[in-house]
Image (cartoon, rainbow, N blue to C red; front, side, top):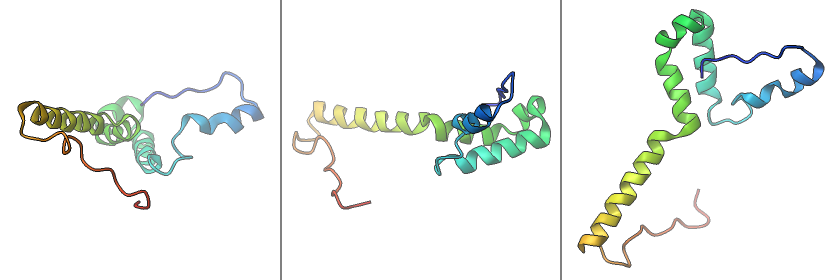
Length: 103
């Protein structure tokens, strides 16, 4: 996350495509990326790796969702374990789906 990729030659095409590698086009991780980049800019990349670790971890979690996916896997495993041991019926194996018009 703390690496910077710069083109060897700068052209109008590199200026147009420079935003592809950032999260600024999506509203979900844009704030996390801005906080991390501002911190890295203030401390520099080398010291920023230790000083800005919280911001970088937040950005990494927003990007890759490792904690969220492991939480979902743990809930699914526990629900399946309860179904195997008989604590949960087959009709109640999975939670009911959300309504289609809910947000």
